[in-house]
Image (cartoon, rainbow, N blue to C red):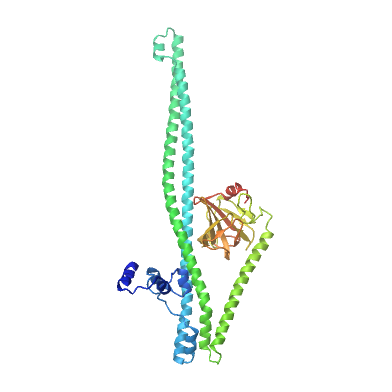
Length: 455
């Protein structure tokens, strides 16, 4: 296949190259959201992305109202147009279903990769902690061996062989033998302490080597998890774009289909007007649903201040805010694994659970950039915010339709970003809140307490 530059060079040689403006008109910049919005489906979209200088190949052209009006006047043309529109509606539904399935698969893969990275980070931390403990043991044993050696030297005093040779009395010899016996005990003791020091040192080195290997594995898995996160976000965006394209086109297509199937004298203009009214009603319903969701979040949070911390969304002097008004229902660290219809939760709880009630507000713990806002396997609907300096926070189990921010959006501390739910491997409505430092999880209780926040 010729490259884009080869095609452009060929245009230039023949003197028929379009101007920059003409190129923009003929071949507009495309992305997946734009393509889906225009109705580019499946493999046709791939061909556009592979060669941006090739005119888009639409899977099927959407009929205009003029075409519908002409087809309505001819039975053969009408039947063909009806079949075409029915195929387009089915194609949109298939596209949405396919994109959703791909998004779910990418979400599950991200979750697995993220948990594997967290496990590796925890193992690396534990190995390093054990190595540090063995190193401290080795140092203590070496110091003890030094003290015994000094005592041995002091007990030896002068040349013991000469003292024994020149001993003039049995009493003197007995004294010397007693001293030699003491020295033997000190030598044995020193050998034991020295052996302990060597063993601890070797153990510390071995554990340190294992920790280094585990850190390399941690870093490898972190890269995989980051790649999976991007893939999952892209898949979620594409699924949402396909849904938006379906919603945008289906009202028109269904109105056109109704116009073609209607045998009365009702005009195409009447169906166009009905299409407009239905679209406006759908927009009003969506806006009303969003307004009610936010009102419900505010209402629940106003009454959820007691029983465990309160202050959801309130920013303190450090610039941080409590992410929920709920009480802490589960802490950070090892626990018995919980199982339910959604599966089993991890036995190491990587965050804290804050329960304020279904649809209660979830707030950004600090200012930052949203780097993920989509489903994430066992976390259900999930948001991750990057606060800079290697610090990020995660918000899991958000209710369906309860994500109020988008990928790439900047949010302020205390800003309402979502509402509490029970999605993923959850056992009741709550916020699962995580804090990440250099990618790995840390205890949110300690981290937030250092910033003046009790969770």
